[in-house]
Amino acid sequence: MPWTPLRTWTDGDQVTAAALNTDVRDNMVWLDNRVDQRLFQVFLPQAVQSPFSPKVLPGRRNGHACLFFQDEFTTYAVYSSVLPLAYTGSGLVVELYWTPADAGTGTVAWTAEFESHTEDVDNLASDSFGAATTVTDTVPLQSGIIKRVRFVMADGAAIDSVAAGESYRLRIGRDADHAEDDMAGYAQLFRVVVREG
Amino acid sequence: MAFTTPRTWSATETVTAAIMNTHVRDNLTNLDGRTGTKPFLVWLATANQPPAASAATMAFRNGHPVLEFDAATAEIAIFSGVLPVSYSAGGFLTTVYWMAASATSGDVKWNVYIEAHTPDADDLDSDSFGSLNTTTATTASAAGELMQTNVSITSGDGLLAGESFRLQVSREANHAADTMTGDAQLLKVVFRET
Image (tube, rainbow over all chains, first blue to last red; front, top):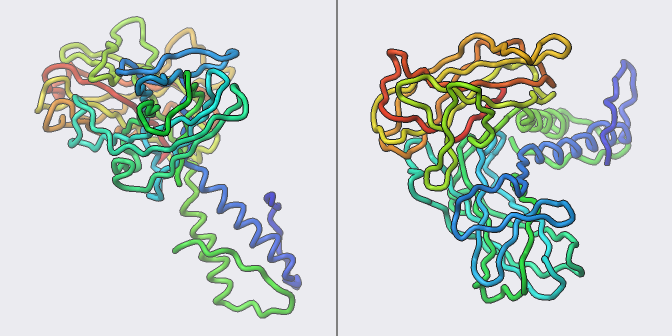
């Protein structure tokens, strides 16, 4: 339901169930849904960090910047940021927006890994990504139609224990060697979203 | 306290203190505590808009883009943004995410300056950074380990919500308090409301 402008109560008002449901209950539900969207980071293809091997290939599709993931071997894209202080420890959701380069059938196996940079502990001279989470997704009805694949990752080890205010990297991969990854051709990645679960 | 699914009220029911406290007071308190709309801007090293002189040097460390600040000469990085309209005049804090290129001891003096771009007032043909904000921090115990150094912004150049601004970060390497040998590598900068 939409937000209702707050009622100004007056002496002698009859507090009805309808008024309480509209002005109190519904507005609270609206706020509850809205505050959960405060942690919301969007990574575009231009934000990918190279060099990284084996890395994805940058490209375009009808003017849309995208990253090309191979079907013959596993390729990665790495993004870097700081987790906002608004994070309250409910885990993170990572969403990928992708489409196949060519028409076809099959499934793509996507992976997501976090690497937290804990102050005075983690050494950036070597990589320290946590365990990979894998999600498979089938091709859309038509090449060019965007699909959204979602990783739901619990707080703690699944996100390498990245904490609010900490620097982190997120590595997105196409696990081309995965038994279920059988889509021929490139997978094109357009957006990556990180938000609180 | 946790958020309780708001009560659906029915006609003629008695509104008790317990109901009002659980469904109105406690839920509003919960929502107030979870409203995290304070500005939180993140810049990576790649967002640097280098000045014409004394610019920090772009480099990579194990694939991480970094800006290198010299140990002998003061060098500068500049980041640009717009302060979100959610800013509620709570003051600012800058956090510098950095590491030593090789040192395992010593201090680095980080300076931060804000330049507000007040509409129809500030002329971008010349720099107009405000006064100095500074913190001296000790490096991590191993080169390559990250430090998060907070610089309290006591001089924000009058920056207002919705205004364009620049943030200048520099290492005052020729200051007596800056004792770390070798480069300091800047990975990220956060600018947020306190």
